[in-house]
Structures are given as C-alpha cells and as structure tokens.
Image 1 (cartoon, helix red, strand yellow):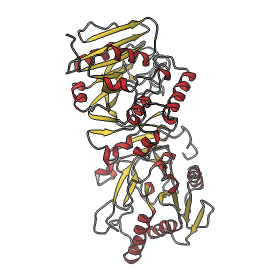
Image 2 (image 1 turned 90 degrees about the vertical axis):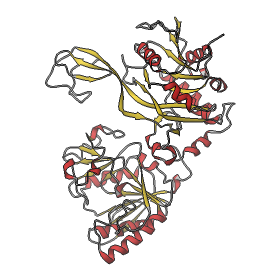
Image 3 (image 1 turned 30 degrees about the vertical axis):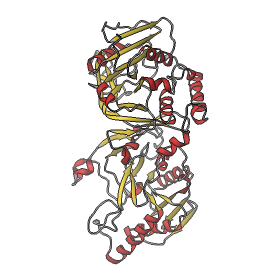
Image 4 (image 1 turned 180 degrees about the vertical axis):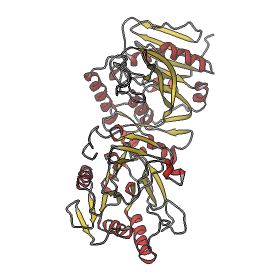
Length: 547
C-alpha cells in the first residue's frame, strides 16, 4: 500500500548552491508526514543532496524551466497538500502542521516572510564583514554597502556563512500594481480586517505558497504559457481569488527567503531576458486584466474593489481628493518653490491660504494677518471652506510629499488619519530622522465635512480662550479636557516617505537626540539616515537644500 503523504514540498532548482541547506532545513523542521521533491533543472545538485527516505530527486540534463519543474514535482506527489518553495529558504519549525491546521480547500496560504541572511564577505586583511552580494572589489566602510573603507585597502575576501532570518525584516502583505507587477504592501496590515493570525492578502511573492494538491490542479497548476519564470505571485493570487477562493497569510508560521537582485554572481539562476519578462507580463495581463482565464468566477475589478483603496490603482473615490496648502510666506524661496513644484505634480485640485497674495493652486485665499497658531487655524478653515473636494490632504509649505501619500482614501468619515511615514530632514547636512510616533498636522487626511466641523469649533474656542498646548495641534490625537471634540484618529503609512524639511524657522521645534524628549514614547522606532538613503526619492535630488 502506498504511503500517502500529508505534504509535498516542491522545489525546482537550477544552479542553486544553497539547495542542500534548504532541503536539510525542510527535513529537519517538518513535523508531519512530509516529503521534499526536488527537480534539478539542468544540472546535478552541487553540493550533492544527502539520501533521505523523505526526499525524491529528479535530474534533468537540460533545463525545462521553473514552472514546468513545479508541475512535474506536483504530478509525482500523492500528498493532500503541496507547498511550492524556492531553493534558498528556511522554514519555521513545524511549518507543515501549522499550515495544514488553517487551510480550507479553496484557500491558498502563505507564511509570513523574513529576508534570509545567508552569508557575509570577510576582508582577509582587516576582518571587516559586509552583507551578502557579489564579491566586493574593495573593503567597505562598516555599516555601509558601497563606501570604501578608508582605513583598509584590502581586496581579498572570504565568505562566512550566516544562514539566519533577518528578524527585523518581516513581510506579511503584498499586492500588484497596474502593470500586474509585484509590490510589498505593509500598510494593508494596519487595517482592522488584517489584524488576526489569518488575514487576506491581495497577492504574494512567488517563492512560497501552500494549498490542497487537488486544488492546485483545479487551478491548472503553473501556467507554462507565461514562460519559465516571472509573474508567479500574480498568477497564483489571481487564480486563488478569481476562482472564487481565498488567499491568506498565516502569521503563526514563517519562511525566510534569500533575495538576489544585484546581478552577476548574485543574480537569478534562470536566464531572464527583457523579451521573457515582457512575454510573462503580457500573458498575465491577457489572462487577468483581459478576463480570458476560463475558470474565473470573479473578474479583476472584484479583487480591486475588495482591497480598495490600493496604491497606484484608480478608485471611484479618487476624483474626490483635493489639497489645502497653507503658508506664512516667510519660508526660504528655494524650499518653498521645490515643495510647491512637487505638489503640482500630483494633479489634484489645490486651494492655498497665505498671509501675502500669491499665485499657487487653483485658488488662493489671502488673509492679511500676523503669523501665529490662531492665524494658521483660520488659514486652514478658509481653505477648507473654499475647497470643493470631499477628501482633503493637508499640505504644509516646508514638506516634500511623495506621490504615494495621495493614494490613501480614508476608510471612515468620522476619523482623522495621519500618515506616519515621514522623515525629518535637517537642511544643514541632509541628516534624516524618523520615529513611529509622528502624527503631524502636515500628514493629516480626512473628509472635508469632518474637518470643517472641527476647525470651525477650534477657531471659536481659540478666539475665546486663546490657544494652549493642551489643546494640541493634531485633531483627534488626545483625550484631554481641552480637546476640541471627541472624534478619534488613526494612522496609515504611504509606500514611500514624506520629507519634513527642518530649516530653523519651523512652527514646531526640531529635536535630534533622544534625550531632548521628556515623553519617551515619541522616540519609539528611532532611525537615523542621510537623505540620499531614503527610499522613493532620487539620490542627490535635494542637494540644493544642503548648505
């Protein structure tokens, strides 16, 4: 009688030097009747795989491609479940038992993911170690990846194995953009419906997924018309959702995956030309956006509506957005003009409120008042009253807003929302600082009617009793007796950060050391970098700011 397995872990491997470590780790950490099926695609495994009763290896002298290899491995399986896995991964102890426990028949399940730290390069001269990648040409500055170590002229290196997850680099939620290209979506995890141990995710990375074996074939396995490699995550996610099923992340277990995106000896094992990428992308668009997958019970718009708002995707609420911009007209012109230029690129209607007449936005409100807290509140109220938009983004004159900031749509009409993905940038040297507690008025977004109600009441209160810090600048962020109203607040994070330019004349003080904060909660998540290291912004783009 054939021993029917619980799980078959399917690995298609081509020129994978860490395959043996991956296989040994799977066999060590499995707790069910689980096997590993390896398709050695075009070469014998090197180093060789050790014999094991729960390991099956098929060697192809000529490469057949990753998708075809996974399909072949699935045909060799008799297990209830299959798990596709890349050949450079670590799995959690008892991964199979944990995944089987929460996998309905029409579900596709992915574990949470950590980046995998495989090895370091060690300089033979000074012993300095640098993170994995192509072999270095020179000894690098400690803590850097590209800067030369001026204290050492070493040019010979040895690899030191690490083979551990990077525990601070965890990813749980993914999506794809309008080109159906994979993207991370960490901010999805902040939605209330994403808080449980099992949560819906729009897409996945193609390195790992888990499902019933019969379900895999009901979904036509891996579509070989895509080509050998590429669009795997989009394919699996669209099949899972559009078939009428579900794609979830199981946060109770994890896998750790090595990323090779630096080319050369640290690039992809499968040759991937521009034409192959184009073929996979066109096939993906034809099936999912074009509605040509014959087993679809839902269309792509259903999926977009389910997860809306989605960064980079149009949404029926998008045309309701607008910007209010307020300034005291005292800012250095080179900063003011750069921030205004960035806002114009967003293509949203802008109402500006200023203390001097100016030509900026679709409409300018000039209030001939002296700078101060009450004046700022009056400027905000005047701009809100002049705006015709339903969803309002607050934009201050000394903040550079990234395009992804404006992808957000408030889920509720009675809540103030703050984008906490913001870095403070010191104009003197480009030093940048971020904490996770940055709820700032400059990152506020909410529905106009809620904002009008709040700021009308705020202006009346300040005119009557004067402004105090206990009232606070940020609506909905505290429960003190001096609060304006009882509405609450929540946060979101844009895909890329906004930059709060600190120039010495900001309304709020700049603090660059932890010790300057009396309340230590405002130092939570403290990170320091240089402006050129911040993601989503072009390196050197702000050199004109630096004195």
